[in-house]
Amino acid sequence: MNRGLGSWPARRAAISPDRVALVFGDASWTYAELRDRITRLAHRLRAAGAGRGDRVAYLGPNHPALVETLFATHLLGAVFVPLNSRLTAAELRYQLDHSGARILIRAPECADVSAPTTIPLSSLSALPEGPPIEADVALDDPALILYTSGTTGRPKGAVLTHGNVTWNTYNLLVGVDVAGDEVTLIGAPLFHVAALNQCLLPTVLKGGRCVIMPSWNVDQALDLIESQRVTWMFGVSAMFAALARSPRWPHTDLSSLRCVMSGGAAVPPALIRAYQERGLTFCQGYGMTETAPGATFLEARESLDHVGSAGVPVFFTDVRVDGNPGEVLVRGPNVTPGYWNDPAATAGAFTDGWLHTGDIAEVDPGGHFHILDRLKDMYISGGENVYPAEVEAALFTHPGVAEAAVVGIPDERWGEVGRAFIVPAPGPTPSTTELRDHLIERLAKYKIPAEFTFVDDLPRTGSNKVRKADLRKLR
Image 1 (spheres, rainbow, N blue to C red):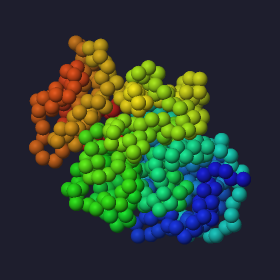
Image 2: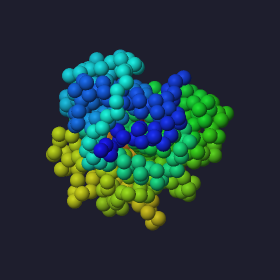
Image 3: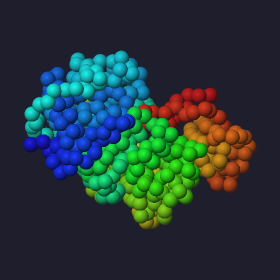
Image 4: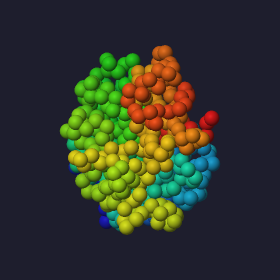
């Protein structure tokens, strides 16, 4: 019996075959049509040699073929490896070799890499019919290998089991009232755990409609919110900031949106309030690839009273800090069993069953977690800990700042001081003196950066996180 993710489309099609499952451009597919397309693709993958435990990779933009490949792979009991389409050929070759992918489905616009069997994405449009496929898949079987951003050294392949993803979905559905008539906008990349596990899969489980964007585009997002009557969307801070800066922001009809949800990095409170002022419920959570990804969540009913908090531990997961503030530790059925072919990294990530996240948080008297920063991003200036995320949030409140990233740099007197990289907002660029004066009212002096550098944009990973290691190299 298939108890894994591969069984979901057929189970959902049995309940609501005529509901629209996916929308992409002008095309749409019902759940019955999606089930049939997935079965056809599973036969194609099996003919190419994919079976239980084999790895099937996908390299391409957000597309219905990614969804079909994921479920077809799991229908066979194989392991899905979504690849970051923004990576170079050398980076992708490492991940293909490391995962041992037997099959690669590749879009033509992506880097020219291959697996033992490479299938062009274009060839999936017309596949012959085949009978239903039954494979024995247990919840403890590996479902996904998701490569971390690799900001230091080689990226690690986090393994998520079918059970990890299923329990994460339960956690999400406890925190968000996802409905059967949900219309979910998916603009974040589906090779990233948040869009995949926090948006696509919960929507499919509930029988809602997933509106897929090939890539993030502010104008297209606003168009789709209006035309598709989008009810729910996920984004990272940079995406929501770009929406709020659009000249169309004050006038676009956003009345269909029940909730917007963010994660991946701390969201400046000023940005959350910009959404609340439009009458929108802004929820955020905290997690990581290794937790599938939810660890804490701030529910809609608390979003006004706890702006800036990452919420409390999700329902079926334990979260604590080692000190207050201290490193966040997580354990639960959604937590990875370890890293693919890397027993040393697996052993180093856990203590007595608790996953070390590398993130620093403090917990307020009400039990709400406040994520301060990455452990490796914190720097010490004159003996005082400085959390760049706090400084970045303060900078973001200045109207002349569109984005900000702060890193610690060596200093003979203080050990380390801050250097702020600023992406100016449209209009006059603020002066360094103006920014310092702005921060003096909001932060202790030792937290104020010693240097300010204005840039056109910030280097980012495929999941839209700022590559601070790259910024530290700039002088």
